[in-house]
Each structure stands twice: as structure tokens, then as C-alpha cells.
Length: 224
Image 1 (cartoon, rainbow, N blue to C red):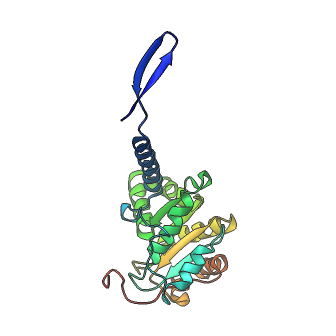
Image 2 (cartoon, rainbow, N blue to C red):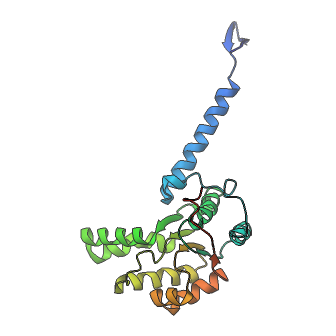
Image 3 (cartoon, helix red, strand yellow):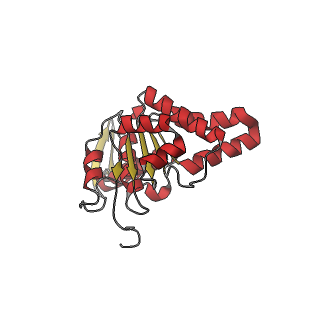
């Protein structure tokens, strides 16, 4: 590092110049820590912290629709991507989720979860604190500024009465209050989605999304 001559009153002395490279490194490190903290707080899996709209797969006929819908997304509209395993549904919508919640403080409190994790969290809360605790465990997801609900219907098991009621309430509150919601599912059939969640829920999904986005093709994880 270079030195420079400093004068302060009656005193003169040499001091090291500031290191621009060091300052930039600290700035980048601080930024990355802030990003990691925000994504962790939102519940985004660490493996998806790097999901970015700048680093997605090349656009082709299989994903051009979701690329267009993601690029043109505006709050409070919803997005739902459906299709076989490994076609990029979660990565695309998580990339938009990450970009959105990092863009402005108004998205603080946004949450990412899978449907199964939501129910598991509720079951644990019920075991420890009863019905009230179970309701409290899902309340943040119902009211979050932006919600990504991944892999809905993954278990294919019939919903319990409480689970069905909770999902109806979640979608109803978010729809009625204009709270944007991203969803992914391997269930492609509107009839099957309606059978699982009820026409009440599917009607709101259809209205808020305009239409679901179908991703086609083979499992990209297995084909490089």
C-alpha cells in the first residue's frame, strides 16, 4: 500500500492510503451476507440461494412461456407452473422470488415453503401447543407479502379436514387481499387439482394466474 503525508495542526505524519480493493471486497462481502440473511429468513433452501434470472437454462420451446411470464410479472398477479419432475418449475419461480424480495424492503416477511413442510410444521406445533399453536404456525404464510408454495399436491394423499380447510383459507385470504403467490405442482390436470383442493380454491388460482404455465420435457437434472 502507498503512504501519504498528513498534516494535523502542529503534527505531520505518514499514513497508509485506503485500500480500494479491500473496501470493495468488504462491500461485496457485506452485500452477500445481507442477501444470505434475507433468503434464509424467507425459508429459501440454501441450494436455491443462487437461483437468478440471469443464470437460468437457455430459453427453448419448452420454457419460453415461463420465461415470458416471469419477465412480465407484476404484483399482485399469481404464477403457477406445472409439469413433470425436473423441468425447472421451482428454479424459475424461485429465481423471480429471490429477485423480488431482494429488490425492496416492502417484501420483508415474504416466505418460501413446500406444501409438505407447511403441514409438517403445523403438525409439530399442534403436538406441542394444541390447535391454537397449529393455527399460529400457518398464519405467517397466509399473510406474507409474497408466498412461494412449492410442490403442492406432491404427496397425492387425501387432505385431512384441517389441511383442506387451511388451504382454502390460505388461498381465499391471499386472493381477497391481493397478496401475490407463486406455486409449483406435478399435478397438471385442472380436474385433479379441483378434486384435491375444491372448486373454491381452483377458481381463485385460475383467476389470479390467468392460466397455469406448463413446462414440458425430460428431467433436466438427469440430462445435464
